Length: 407
Image 1 (tube, rainbow, N blue to C red):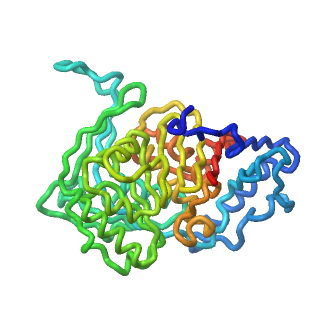
Image 2: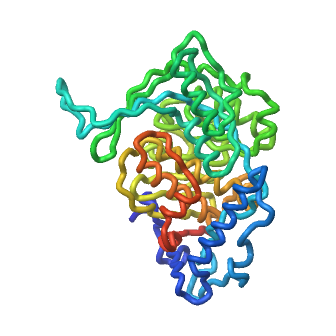
């Protein structure tokens, strides 16, 4: 595969190595022990009043108390046995997720009709949607704290969207209600193979501005996640978050090359793109997502998994095999999983986001697992949990990790 297919160009040259991770190899922890340690950690999260834990599991020692050791035949630049426990969870990350809040109508059909044709609706579902809202809910599902910032109309769809967010544990108190505009309603049409097309009105989903976000709320956050919105709003929010000491990520969506997002892009520590968006961004701006020089870029590759590019190298994983029902929201679930794993690790985010690709072995695995889980749901909003993440990963998910570290 080429580098853009998610594998390093020179993976056999010694700059990168395939991570074996066979539980039977000497010096590598048994996968069942790792899962058991993870189970204990998640139980402690759920039992602690503040979502924290009294003591991390893993770290420099394996679940059985022995030190981790890599096999002699493994490149020392590659972690043969990445720690898949959600370590350092004594601090629960608080994230402000800013962008679109929609009400979704998901329509499943066997196949899309030809022009002037007709097809039968097999299933129709209504639920909350919008990238900012989806990520906020996913982070709460994975043990984080979320505040969503955006705007809805003063109508029934807006009330339903806010009620669903509150029921999911997201704080919607900062959301602007624009009585003069309808809530954005997105019609998602999914065919029998899980592929989709979308119809949407803009409505009120970009009525909010940076000035409307309470600065104390932003100051209390660890991280700001931006999704599609007015470019000037995104830039102002990213700048304010940087001044408040919060890290920043941005998932600009399909219109990344059509809107003047340069200021927000350059103010972000992490970018989330799919491969088409990455190509469009490279062609239209001075940002090269495939070979970044000053940020981390997580590129989603659909059924081929994902690759995380940094100034010092990359880590890729081919994803997990599932039978997709609906791919809507899979990218948002990936972002939620990636951030949920990364923001709990001081080594990754203690001083901005690390540029060492080896630090993203667990986030890319969790992101891919969450994206896979999302494709098995019939709406863009899915129920994530660490149990579902572990179930999707199965045994030795690190086996297919491919890491290239550049000098």
